[in-house]
Structures are given as structure tokens and as C-alpha cells.
Length: 214
Image (cartoon, rainbow, N blue to C red; front, side, top):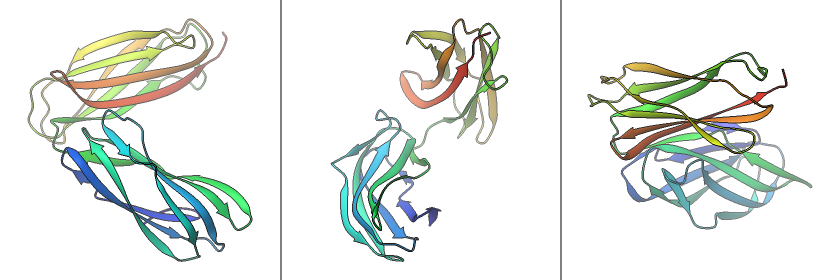
């Protein structure tokens, strides 16, 4: 099982067909203190792709080295990312715990949007040109796909950066596409990449960046 102290965890299955599906979450107390009054949630980073159903699970007591298996239902539409959150008491202290993201593949898609990256120095200044790169990996022979790159500015404007037709990729082959952006104000920016197969969205990635005053 994967571990982020004080909890070991495993989510199964990690691949499923589209539709309403059940997953099992195995939790183990890897610490030295009792965990009590645990509110356990399975969360999605993108409800369009994977939507969790229900109000979570409650575990009154998880002793050191004890394991529990909880069931959660998800509405699976596209490949996406889930993460686990737990709130409760560790000994006599309150704690909040979150797992790293867990990739769950749904069905078979022609390609995967694997990375989105802002190529620049840390905290670039206003007015400096920033290169945004998105990488697509083929999962099987496919026709060209549509990649859209967007930027959300500190004043919550949503600006289109590029719409790109990807090349045909064989299974395992990668290709990187880029757009450039010049920030005009200080603050936090969020960049988005969307990958479409015709009208179906099959991939989504985000990247955050803080721009300082020049």
C-alpha cells in the first residue's frame, strides 16, 4: 500500500469502464496513536471526468496497525484523478490528512494529456514572455485531436492562448505543443489545457504560477 504518515492506503480498481462504479478504499493506521472519529472522503479533481457519490464514510476508531475497507461509488465518465481526505483525532489532537492524487483510467481513450508546464523562472515579472507547454501521449492509433490552451488572470478573465490540432500518435508516442503568454498584471495565474476527441473532452490539466511586479 502507498503511505503518507500516519495512514497507508490503497484504492481499487484503478481502471474501470464508464458508468456507475464501486471502488474499495483500504486504510491502515501506520502511526503509534489511535485515530478516532474519522470522516473519510473520496474527492475528485474534476467532476466531469470522475464524480464521487455520497456523503463519505465514518470510522469511529482505527487502532495502530488496524485496517478498514470502505466502499465508495463513483460516476466514471473519463480518465481523471481522485484523492482521499481524512479528518479526525490523532490521540488527543485534531488532524487533517490528504493523499497525493490517484490516477484512475476510464475506458480506452486514443491519447492522454500527461503534462502542462510553464517554462519560465520562478515568480517571473510582469511583461516577461512565458511559454506554456502541454504534452500528449498516444494510447493507440488515432486521428488528430484538438488541444486548447487557456489562461485565467488575477482579475478572473479567461483568455484563449491557442487551439492546436495534434499530430497522429501511435501508442506510447509523445508530442509537446506550446503557446506563449505575456502577463500584464501582478498576481496568481492558472493555465488550463483541454484535449478533445471531436466534441468529447478526454484530458484536462492545470498549472499555477505567481507573477511579480516588474
